[in-house]
Length: 268
Image (tube, rainbow, N blue to C red; front, side):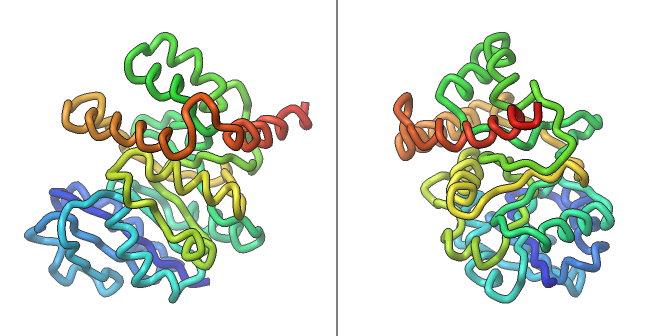
């Protein structure tokens, strides 16, 4: 099975990216790493490793835009395409477990367990969000925490692979043919909701599976909670997402979320 990974960087230093690059380079099943530069890095264009392919984008037009350059250029030449954040670390054995599971299934998207830097679970498998989920999490933490019990599937113990319509975008392993058929990311999203949108479309058309038996570590900073410019981008992306799919009236959201929740009811 041939795997190609893509990373999008913007003003990242080599030291910031080194743990991620080392993890990808040291994983034999990952054949190539497409490094997309949305800025003008003074190091990324150098010959860092034979596995790395460098692409200089035409500008900072977003996370999805950057990954789409890699998808359009290389997804046709591999079996699986990995969309990877620049702040991920993992052991090759963990990735191979995920890849082996994917090779025996027919879904379009797979996500391992995502651990934060402190070792706690980031709850990468989620329901499709309502406006209340997103805005409460940002502006009313107490209310948001209550809603998160359902939204982040915290009320369930997930020990086996499950269907989940919203798999967070830091480490998305796609069946390449299905990713191409989905046309990659919707580039109208600059950042923050493009992964929810693509995961939703993939889950609906091909299936999306959360695989808790393998894990990677994500040094998650929640930048939109710290910088006003990123908060503005987050809010804009949320408005775009709900304008596309529906705010209060989104029958498909209810349908897909019910499929996910019913898995737990059937096991109880």
